[in-house]
Length: 327
Length: 291
Image (tube, rainbow over the protein chains, first blue to last red):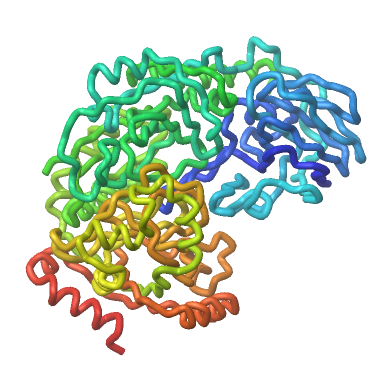
């Protein structure tokens, strides 16, 4: 009743839908970066949508199953192979004891979600199985997986699910465009930059920097921001991008030194001393999780009403997946 | 003083009590977040006080952003009037200043520093006009500090020095953040000191290390069995400079899980502090050392 890690890929962690309620202590939500794909993987294998899965970035792991189960891989285009034979992503398939799952090379996207029927049954820590590696919390021993790790599976293994037959066609999936369009609601410390700098921020095409991980995604290649002059407030620090250390919302776009925006993601640092321009809307957070370094992206201004409509659309897209699979 | 509210995307409301730091702003932020917690508003999922601001995370499927905004704004007047006092703790933190581990780390990141020819302590002494590292350590460790925020990473306290504003130590953050900081580094940026609870990136100047764990996700450390994170906003900290021998002895105690931090119950009132800073601090030090 387990999954054995033969090789871990670049960085593979156990993730579910996260750990709310501890951000005031600096412990972030964590959980799958692309929650749309995480939910879809669980739907395909008949799990509760919040079950824990494996999240792998850029390179897949190699794993061996010790039990019969249903498995699905969603998210990036990173072809799964069962005992060497290539299979499709976004499609459930059965595995038998001794079967090995490995992966080919990444074609597009950044992260895959590997769901196994029954769910990855690591201990629940503060209400979640998600791994927060920076705080050595949750998941399997609070860290990314290593060769030799064995992960138990939960109840219902091989039982429920689509019997390894379900699939989700491309039209029902959600993936970033090229360039990726990240909708954002200006706010927070937006007033600290000039109107011209604000226009330019939306006009520029940015590129994902190599420093892009579960904590945050850095973007480069745009125009440095011009700040509205002010005498820096007491305690903030001397750079015009400094503020008195404050809370950082998920999706908030901070710009240290006014040069390279960083969008905080699921393992966000909970606060700090850099001004923020606003937040990427909740509906587009999944998309960031599928961006590779060097891929182009643009920020688009939206209103609160548009953000809520986008949130509604994302929920409707998830409902279409459920309907398609008869859930 | 009027709170500046802003939406942070479709899931957060951010409130800035003031642009600059003060204990008054901290207490308003704390009163606001306490009021939000007590109101038990359906759809609110995270309530985070900060130094001079706060943040509330919510589920817009359960409460309309505009409705929550109105509700928070209606709490502002009461929060501003509330009694700025609390039952709290004073905690002694041993510090090995000028230690070999932060020294090794800061030497690796000199090109990101304002003055590559100096160590972080030498630079901090210089920009505060204190002349020597010894004087700086004395200024840093002789007065208590107030925990005005917990966060950045798990359990990290932001500490605000309890002295007149003109005596408060201020040091700029690194020009570009480091990619590495030793675990349990005592750092400083702007007017805030901090203790890095875990190893990782950081932009604060590095002054020393404490042997005393402040975050334990495994909850095995004897004084962190109930709570993973030691610090809460409102705690008061007194640094205690230690020698290398004392540091090593403390590490042995920590490794054997016998280390007992000095933590005393006390109370703090902002109006008393503003009226009589020296007397308030003397009472706090008595609470720490008086038995």
